[in-house]
Length: 70
Image (cartoon, rainbow, N blue to C red; front, side, top):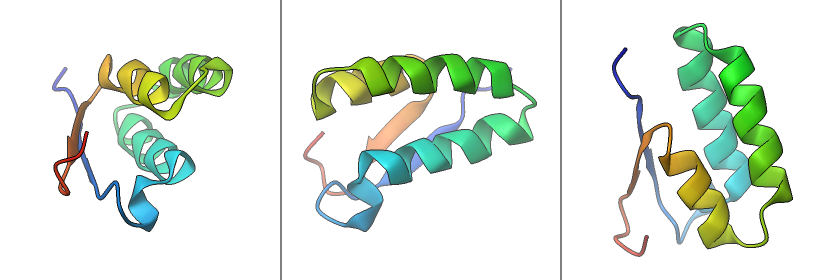
């Protein structure tokens, strides 16, 4: 199955971790991978930092910061 590609702007509203998780959820819902999304969501919520949360999400999708910061 193809890895979803998610674009966000770390300096804008789409850089909010919950906005990224929402885009992640939409991509996984389209691929009927909602259980995998739920597991990742739990791990992100338990993470200790924004960078750690992004690293967890990047395990499953190609996460692209259009601002080039992350």
